[in-house]
Image (tube, rainbow, N blue to C red; front, side):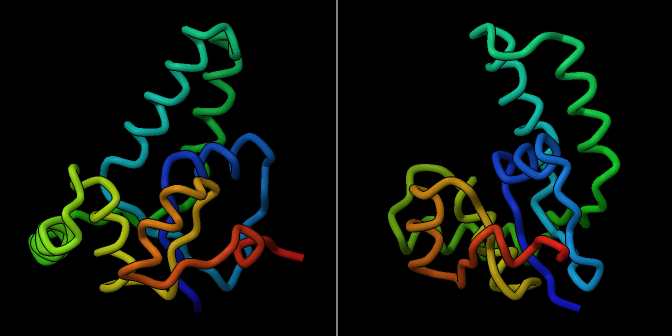
Length: 133
């Protein structure tokens, strides 16, 4: 079984497109991923890009996706060290990198900026690796 870390934009992409993740893959993410995804949805509502009903439907699809949420002391400690070593201004990207290094085969994101940043310290893979054929 391959394990892949995903971020909130990727989680929304999977939910919006109703992507079926390959049965041999497990998704993992920091504890905050669902809150981050809801924040992105709220931003969309405020910009007029989604309705409340759209958000509720998307939220339902998000909750059906099986994701192992992580945030233990070891991953938080590694995230801290990565952020310090890389001189990153926040811990969010470092959390994805840390969990990837500790628990997964690669980090998958649709965010090119985040992919480039995390690629400096952890393996990154394209979205297509998740998709069941």
